[in-house]
Length: 407
Image (tube, rainbow, N blue to C red; front, side, top):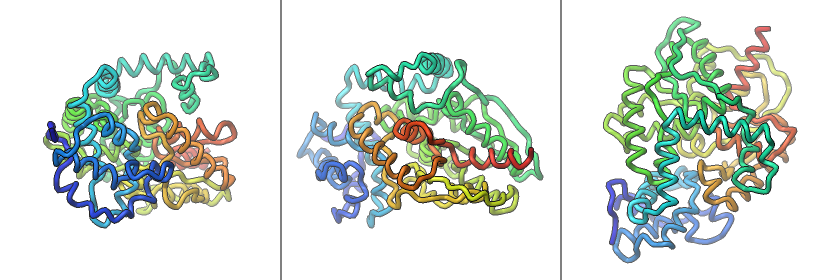
């Protein structure tokens, strides 16, 4: 039967894999199961079988692709530079096209329409806040228990949408800030820190009112039409700015890949940067200060879409050092924490096991402050670490240190 969509895995991507196996020890699901089908090499082989007509997009194919976290840990070690993340999104697009069902349609509605609607986000925020106040996470329901990883959020959520703040230092350029679908409402302190630091570094910062969800979760789940629509809206919303900055690693990684999703996406992708990169550069240039050492440790957790997809590792550590802290490594390989967007709901057993392993890595270094630059990772860490740990974005840690110096 083969492929049916324009986003399907490309033959050049499948042919590039030389089946060397270097990806195997980097893959979290292979490390958990030891199954070839749970490895990048095995998944590419399954895609190639469908492309050649040997296999079809059936239950087994969906299971093989569904177990993948799309963490992209395989990409940095691949000698053939196989764009595995893009191929996986193509495989998910094919599953959605060839095996539509009520469950998938509901997910597409939530990920494509719900996350792109501010009204829907406000409604979900209200009920999430209510659940926290009523302590519903104590109920023996796996889905409800996920709210233990959330920060305490206000009933109405926060919003920086539509804000424009001028540079507080000699102007060096303009920045459009991606507010994010839930980032602004549930992790608003991160966006506030970004606004403070970017303006202090000399940027005029705008949070365009016309923007929407970046579309990463829709793309990862194969909701092609929604991912294309959301990307198109944002390309228009972010036109004319020197840089487009995101405060969530998953969002910045997806924005950088907009060339796959909409006309004008390549041009915008060239202006995209994760906030850790922009802030670290400002510190290195002397536009933001380095603070005195405070002789306290910060456990560094690398979100997959920062470390593996964007190859950004030094910058979060430079920011933590500039805040006066000592960064402490917890995992040289950058194993996925298991959050992976909606993966924690779709594959809860695997997600929970990886979450427990990541929490154990943090506990081993005996640091109560943890730096993580992605909201899903932060939620996973908080849910698995429990009380006694403070999980913050690196720029929050730095912004809070700066505020302390000014008082």
